[in-house]
Amino acid sequence: MSQRRCVNRTFPPSNATHKKTLAAVPIQEIRLLETRTSAKERLRQRHRPNILPKSYITCKARILISGKAFARCVKLFPFTMIFDLPLFPLNTVLFPGMNLPLHIFEPRYRLMIGRCLEEKSAFGVLLMTEGQEGRKAGVRHVEVGCTARITAHTNLAHGRMNIQAIGERRFTLVSKREQDEYLVGQCQWLDDEPLEIGARDAARLVQRALRRYLENLMEDVRITGADPNAIELPNDPYHLSMWTASLLSLTSPQKQNLLEITSAQERLEREYSFLRRTEIVRQAWIERKRDNLPTHPHDQQLGALSQFISLN
Image (cartoon, rainbow, N blue to C red; front, side, top):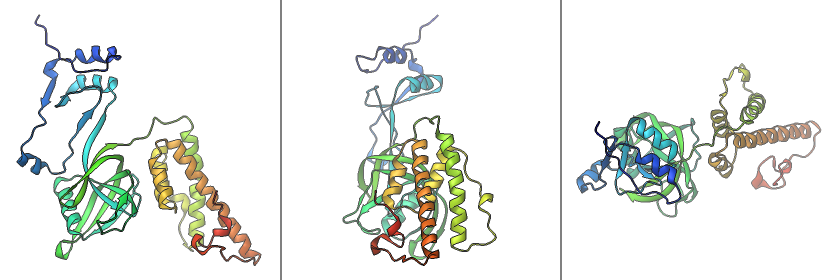
């Protein structure tokens, strides 16, 4: 019986188990792709995802392991996938599952969106912290965002377009560069930790609070003929937390904080706190109006409910 040759790579000296396991991967199941590409090839690829392993395995080539060999290595080797993503800083926080309508008029973003449509790829949305939309100078943004997938688009005169996109998956920005006057980032995925034991209980609390919130909202804006109980709320804790975060009327920093949390239970607990506070403030406002008490805010910058909102 002929023996199949195996290949070793560089490992931390303290991790003998990893070394032994990867040494058992047949060389026939490993294909090395050279990282050297011609200038023409790099131009053709533009900002297509460039997946590179960042792990205990160190080599100058990308390693693609097929079939069961890949599955064995994934279980034993913690690694992060680094990929290229065109970036679109906006004055909004995008959550997975959230709709995002955009009017594209700047030449650099018309080029970027045109490439995304051609290659059927996503782009990344990051919340701006400084600067203005439509201007390059002085723009700063956060480092955690969400990818957006274009679901529909309409071409307009002079190269402009309207697009409908939907949030898909969170990412963290590792580094960035400018390409054809728009930003391209090297990113890695940001996913939730495994679901905690109390996450489903927290989800049920948020569902009940959400129905009260929607019922009060419909009453306040005098929407008739709508039944908040008929609205189908997500049952999965992760999807419910993202759906709620996109719905709540919060400040951008508060929404960004919810986006960056990697625990579904913690995110739901914070959202429940926001919903309860909204309910308490609304009830206090109704009682003051009923008793003809003054309702003028002490600080105009804090809005109509400033005297009921604790800054703590």
